[in-house]
Structures are given as C-alpha cells and as structure tokens.
Length: 145
Image 1 (cartoon, rainbow, N blue to C red):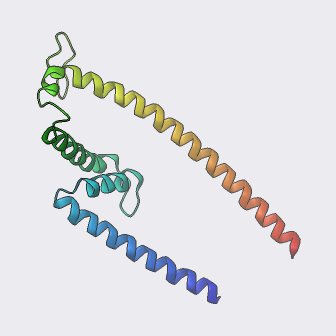
Image 2 (image 1 turned 90 degrees about the vertical axis):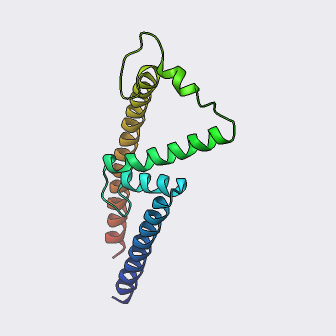
C-alpha cells in the first residue's frame, strides 16, 4: 500500500512537471523560439501533455520551418529566389503555393502517409507484444503464488 502511495505521488509530480514544461514551451514559442515550436508541434501531434490534434500541431511546425528557412537565407545557405523558381514552374498544378512547391507538398504528403501507416503497424505489434508479455507475467506470478 505504501508503494502504491509513493507511485501516485511520483505520478502527480511527473504530471506537474509535464504541465510546467508545456507552459514553458508555449511561452518560448510565443517568443519565436524554433525548438519550442518543434516541441509543441510534436506534443500536439502525439498528445503528450496536450490533446492529440494534427491541426493544432501544424502552426507550430510551420513556425519552426519558417524560422529555419529564414535562418538559412540569412546565413546564405538558401537563396531567397529559389522558392519563386519552384512556384513558377510552367504547367505545374496550382495549389496553396502554386507550381512546384505544391507538387513537392503532395509528394511529402504521400511519403508521410506511408510512414504514418508503418508507424501505426509497429504500434499495433508493440501493443500486441506488450499484452502477451503482461499475460505471461501474470501467469508466472499466479504460478509462483
């Protein structure tokens, strides 16, 4: 019983620390900190300390990507007109950014969909393995008693 109380206390301490971490990440993101935006995007995508919502994750990932692109331009690693050339592809389908960027987005979406499917499959196998191991552990405990 004492161990259960200690576990509950540790769990509530961890939850408080996670709440504080989320709060700090929000403030850092408001200050345009790219790593905070990435962290909040991941938290919203996977539901770590916040509700899991892909739509909520997107603005944080976009802010981080914009910061990275801006830094690349400032450092001379990316010429500002490269995006314009992609957007001006002749005969390219028109989308959110027009031209080649939209085509790249579609390729990324297909790739990400395949990755997400594989991650879901791995998660299913992990859950089945965890259930089997839990059942085996329960059986061994029952036999030991």
